[in-house]
Length: 96
Image (cartoon, rainbow, N blue to C red; front, side):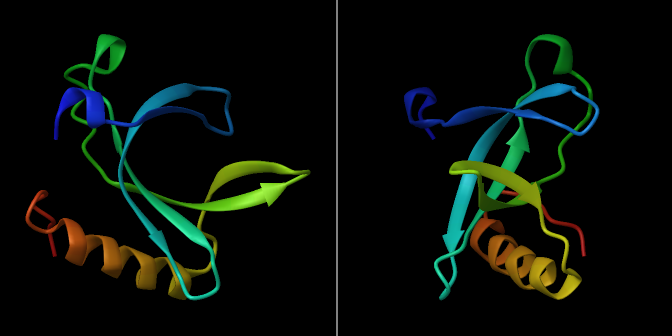
């Protein structure tokens, strides 16, 4: 992917820590719900951290604002993770 095609977002976790993530894929299900596959960006302080896990988050609206949140339901998470794993298998080496 070209550098100018990358979409980088900043996420704040529950403890107030900021991290930069690249959106590597997006999925809309039959209910119109959106899910995002994110990869930590290794630059600055994060360089060499060894963080390479794919983060899967769900888009939700709260008070008119769109937020990304962890998927609470295990079945929902497994379903979405399976979709991303299949789509991204040629790019990433997923462990079974």
